[in-house]
Amino acid sequence: MKTLQRPEVHTPLPGPKAKEVLARDERVLSTSYVRPYPFVPEAGEGVWIRDVDGNVFLDLMAGIAVNTTGYAHPRVVEAVREQAARFSHVCFSDFSSEPQVSLAERLDRLAGGGFRVYFGNSGTEGVEAAVKVVRYHTRRPYILAFTGAFHGRTLGSLALTSSNSKYRKGFAPLLPGVVHVPYPHPYRPPFGAKPEDAGQVVLDYITHLFKTKLPPDEVGAIFFEPIQGEGGYVVPPPGFLPALQELARRHGILLVADEVQTGSGRTGRFLASAYEGLDPDIVILAKGLASGYPISAVLFKEELSSWPPGAHGSTFGGNPVAAAAATATLDLLEEGLMQNAYEVGAFLREELAKLQADFPRLGDVRGRGLMIGLDFVKDPGTREEDPELRDRVAEAAFAKGLLTLPAGPSTLRLSPPLVLSRAEAALAVELLGEVLRELA
Image 1 (cartoon, rainbow, N blue to C red):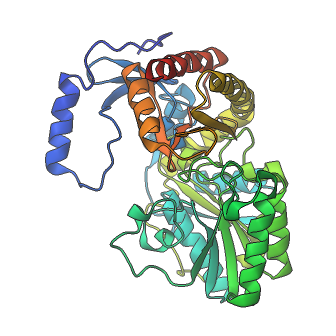
Image 2: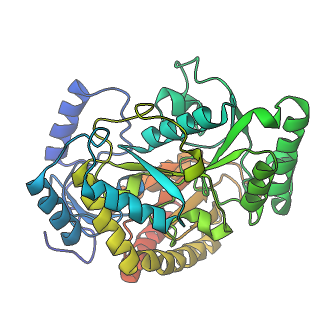
C-alpha cells in the first residue's frame, strides 16, 4: 500500500463495506466489546491505515499503544516469517528454545540486570503472574494500588483496576486484600491539595493508613503505573515515585511497575520508570513489546524467584513467533525509535499546547514521549471534566481521517506508532486544530 501524505476519506463513515462488517459483528460477537467509532481496518503501512472502503487514516492510537513499529514494518514481518517457517509452538512452559531465551536475556539487560523473566500473552496475564510472585514470595495478604489504575480485566487483575467502575460492576467478589489510594494527579490534585503538594498528600495518606488500618508488614507490594494509562495519561509530580519507592523499601514492600502501556520505548526510554531513577522489584511489559504480536513479560528480581516448577505456567506464553517479533522490535527501538519517540513526542506536545490559547477548554496537555493526553474541561477555571466534548473531538477527528482514543473521564489519548515523523506529527496537530476550531 502506498504511503500517503494526508488522510483520504472518500465515503461517509462508516462506508458500505464497513457497515456490512459491523452489522455482522453486532450479530455474532460479544456485547462486551467497545466500538468507540465505526472503523474497520484492512491494511496499513507505517502510521497509515486503510479501511475496507479504501479510506486512509493517520493513526494516533496504534491499537492502544501496541503497534510500536507501525504497520507492516519489513523487519518485523521478516522476523515473523522466518520464525514461522521454522516452528510456531512447542509450549515454552515445558521446553526451552532459543528465541525466548535470547529475548529474556535482552530484556534483563535493558531493565538493568538481575531479573528473571516469565512470559505470558497479554498485560492482564502479566499482572496476574506478578500478583502470584508477590503472594508466593512475601506471604503477605495485602496489595496497595491506585485509583485511576488500569491493570487488566481478568478477575485477579480486575481487583487492582479502578479506572472505571463499569469494569468491576457485576463481578464481585474480587481478589481480597487490595487497598486503593488516590493517584497524585497534578491537574486535579487529591484531597483539595495544591498541584505542588499532590504527591506529598498521597504519601501522607499512605502513612496514615499504615498507622491506622493497614499494617505495613502485611503489605506485599505496591502496584503502580509510571504514567497512568486508561486513567487519563496522568504523569505524577516529580519526586513522587522515588519517595514512594523509599517508603516501600522502609517496610519491606515490593514495588511493581506496570509498564504494559508505558514500556517498550513509548515514552522515549525503554522503561518510563527510568525517568525517576526507579529500581522496581517487578516490571510488567506487554502491549508494544512485539509490535502487535501477543506476548507479555514479567521481570522479577532474582531473589524473588522462590516458587518451584509448575507453580505457574502458560501454554502459549512466550510464543516463538511473538518472541521473534519482539526481538525485531527491540532492534528497531535501540537503533533509533526510542530517540524518535522522545524527540517527536516533545515536538508534538509543544505544538498541541499552542492550541490551548485559542481553545481554553483544552485544559491540559501532558505526557512523555509519544504518550500524550489532551484533557477537555467544561470550564478552565473549575477544571470540571467534559467527556462529551472529548468524545465529540474524537468523532470529528475520525471524520477527518485521524484515529485517536479516549482515556479516563475526559482525556483524548495520543499513542501513535513510534515511527511517527515530525511532519506527520505536524499534520496531526493541523487536523486537531481544525477540529477544535469547528467545534468552537
